[in-house]
Image (spheres, rainbow, N blue to C red):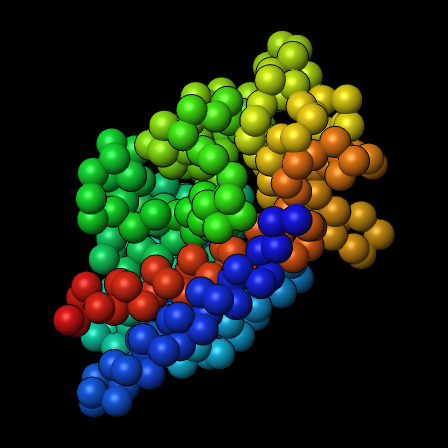
Length: 279
Ligand code: GUN
């Protein structure tokens, strides 16, 4: 079992100690500013969890809400205010955003120094090129951290990532590549998906499609990471079909696997952004 909840707790404890030490030196607490546009209940739930984890480690959080009909300009104005606010260490604009909002403009508006999601092309570019100083996106870095702490060997492994989003699939592939895995990225137009996944020592399922990865598609002993948070009858399910646990050598529970790791990396990124901005 790749117990994301337990590993995340270790990271929360570590950051709590570091935040406590800074505060004891008279330095301000790091602060996370979250932004939600609209009233998607799932987004509200995720952001609440993120704020709760931030508070638990001594990071302040402020919540900003804009109505569904808010314009791109209004959102950009809010981001500008948060960029200029000295007390704000990190800015998180929860996705998905309403369709009428220009996502590219939003992503590039966040000051890269405060981009604790690691979504700005400046940070994404540094990470893609393997250069130091970039903020790594939370879910991908959480996946790599969980594999490391679970004792999964990444170097030389055949890693197959199913999904190519800018938030998860693409950056996860890049981080695994940087760690010397041999990486294949599969997506909706991949021919013979099973032919690829059966070869995977590390299989990252981030397609957002329940039951996409069936037991027969998993190599015996593989490390299987189930990223997706699909909703089925009010409960969370991932992309794995029944019985995958019988074949896999390592498996992330869902919920309780990648989700807590994403939040742990967000908390760590926020702390580190504060330290970098105000050493
Ligand atoms: N939507 C799904 N995952 C994420 C994430 O990690 N950050 C933000 N901002 N939105 C998301």
